[in-house]
Picture 1 (cartoon, rainbow over the protein chains, first blue to last red):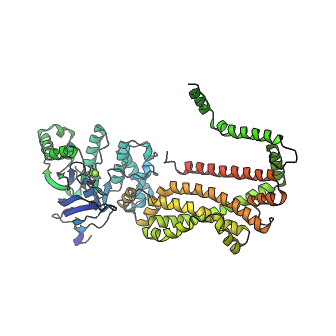
Picture 2 (cartoon, each protein chain N blue to C red):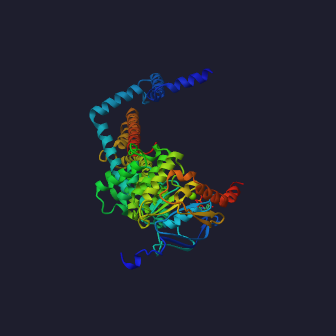
Picture 3 (tube, each protein chain N blue to C red):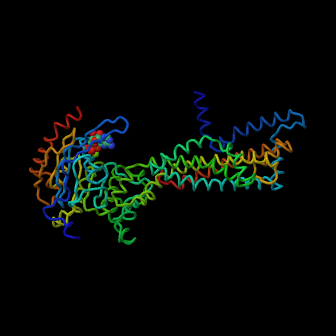
Length: 278
Length: 266
Ligand SMILES: Nc1ncnc2c1ncn2[C@@H]1O[C@H](COP(=O)(O)OP(=O)(O)OP(=O)(O)O)[C@@H](O)[C@H]1O
Ligand SMILES: [Mg+2]
């Protein structure tokens, strides 16, 4: 690594400057301004959550960071380099899971290791170990040979999570990754996710996470900062620092500060949430 | 009430019984009708058909002709498979290729395989190469069209997922696009095999008409000989039944293959 690409302390991991995204329907030419003037820095090693009403552009922002969609305005950088397209250093967990229907659980989790850059330099045995490790971690031991159509929604979501983690990306882009899970499993995996992210490690050794959720309490439990988005068009309406110390235990959920922050965020999006369904 | 219970009783019969009941009934009716005709009548009758079948099998003619036709179908199908798949993947994956080739393909597609027979005969004579060309031509279109469809309808989100895992373009085609297209390709193969079998019979009938029989063989030509030279309607019916049964067997084989190859589909 030369000096130019070395991430300096001051440099954010991700930098979104005045990013906008306008969709144009191919036939009708109808334009939808999904995201407008979105500016945000994500620090290296930060756990950032995005909340906002349905349809406000959260997935759109995530897909642009992933390099899957190009912004129609503004610029996105990672480590100071313009994001041109997708890459394994920015792993994505899709809202609709995007599992390969013809691959078993095991082969879905091992897909990137087998066919993509994350598996470079690993022996078959090492890949296998890694797949097993993450399959076990998400509680899917025993279901390795099943195909996606044989899994429940929550199981599919856990396969997608294991697949993302197995590829060991530097930046984890997660689109409502725990939404389909029951409350207990979700809480277990939240704690597990914090561990994998590196909550116990030095700040410099942590991965960078951008995590979309509908659960305000989930955002407060996990995040260093919570971005609240407003819709039509999608913008940053507030950024809330979550000043709850780490490592976070289950018990913090009952602390007054947790309740305060949850209420504060809820009051920020309440009006829009009501508008959205009115 | 009674009709309801009757239908449900019929519905409860094993499928094999249901499949043979109606044909058996028709054969009985046919035989009764045939017995009212004078002994010299050329009209086919079940008993005579069975006799003819035994004779043709014993002489080896039927087996040999059938195998020859089947061999041509398989060879022609393989040619169509290679061409249809490779072109189909190219057309499905690249819009430029698709838009350039589509008009050509679509203008050839409605031309019946029989319509290219004159050219095939002029170029290749009346033997196996001409028959093979007809079969390949007939089987090519269902394979191509279904491959293009399968490839172009691949869930884009899966391609995107592969890209975020650092899978390069070529590897994405091999590991995402091709497997996702397999169900369509299998469907195309099944349809292609059906039309290939139809085409070979028709081609052999027609080629037989030109050469006057003997050299090119095949079950279609056997039918032509029965028709034009010996006027043996029972022999023709034997051939028709063999053709039908083989078509059915090929179709069932494909269904088994589908089941084996696609364990991930319900
Ligand atoms: N491919 C597309 N073409 C046209 N419009 C689109 C497209 N994708 C998204 N949109 C529009 O962009 C807006 C934002 O969509 P997006 O999927 O980013 O919302 P979201 O915040 O992720 O919603 P949810 O919480 O329901 O997942 C919506 O109004 C949606 O209709
Ligand atoms: Mg979304």
